[in-house]
Amino acid sequence: MIAERLARLRDFLREKGADAVVVNKEVNLHYFSGFRGDDTLLLISKDDALLVTDSRYTEQAAQQAPLFEVVEQKDGLFARAAACVKARGCKKLAFEGNAMLYDSFVKFGALLGSDAALGVSVHLDDLRQIKETEEIAAMKKAAEIGDEAFLDIVKFIRPGISEREVAARLEGTMRALGSERPAFTTIVASGARGSLPHGIATEKLIVSGEFVTMDYGAVYEGYHSDMTRTVCVGRASDEQRALYRTVLDAQKLGVSLVKPGASGREIDALVRQRLTDAGYGEYFGHGLGHSLGLEIHEEPRLSKKSDCESLLPNMIVTVEPGVYLPEKCGIRIEDTVLVTETDGVPLTKSGKELMEI
Image: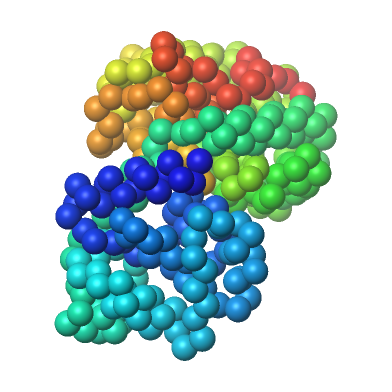
C-alpha cells in the first residue's frame, strides 16, 4: 500500500518538475510512510525515501515505516533535512504550501542556501481523495462505532441531564468500542441552542419537548467518521414533526444524488433548492458536505464553492443539510456516504426517522 502511494507521489513530482518533496503535514507523513508520530519530515525523491526525526521516534519509525531510511536529527529537524538534500544533489524541492509555516519556509530556505530551492508549492492532500480498500474498511469501522454509540445515547438522554453529560457519554462509549479519540469536539445542542450549527456542549440542562442535535465521530486506525442525528425529548409538536420531515426529505435527496459524475456544486444546489422551496432556504447557511479520512474535513466538498466537477468511485463525502431557526431550534441529519461505481452508499447506518425519547 505504501509502495503504491510512493509511486503515485513520484509520478506527481515528475509532473511538477521537482527533484524531491519535503512532507511535513502530520496526516501526510502517516499516509505516505505509515509513521504515526510528530516532529518529523519526509524527504522523498525519485530514488530515496528518508524519514528525519529525533531519538524519541527512531525505533517507532523503523517499525512503522520500513520502506524509509530513518535519519536521526540531533541539531534541528530542518538542518538535518537540508544536509540530506545537499548530500543527494536535489536542486528543486516541492513543499506543502498549505502546511509549512512561513517561518519554517524561511528557515529551511536559508539552510539550503544556494544549493537548492523550495521552488514548487504542492497540495498533497489531493492525492488522498480516492480512498483505498484498507482506508474504506477503517472508515466503515469508525462509522460502526458511531452507530453503536447512537444506540446507547438514545437510552441515556432524558430531561434534566446536561449537554456535556451527553457528550461525555458519547465519547466514553466510542472509546470503549475502540475509538482512538473523538473525531472532533463533540457537538450537543438542545432547544434554542440547536440553531447554532457548531453548538459545542454546555452545562445547559435538557428539557422535555426539545430537539437535541448530536454531531460526533470516532477515529479508528487514524480514520474519521462523522454523523449527526437530531432527536426529540418527549413528544414532538406538529410543527416540530413538519420541520423534521423537511430536513429529512432534503437529506435523503442529497444521499440519492451522490454518484459518480455528479459535481459538488450541483448536489449542494439541488438540496438547497429543496429547502428553499419548503420555505427554509435562508436558514441553511453552511455547505452540504465534505470529504473526510485522515482528517475530519478534506476535499472534495459539496458546497456552492466546490471545486469538484465530478465525484469518483471510492470518494467518501458527508451529506448534512440543516435548518437553524434563531433562538428557537435547529435540526441537522448527517450520513457519511461512499461513492460506488453506480451510486452512494451510506456508511452511517443509524435510523433517520424522527425519534421521540
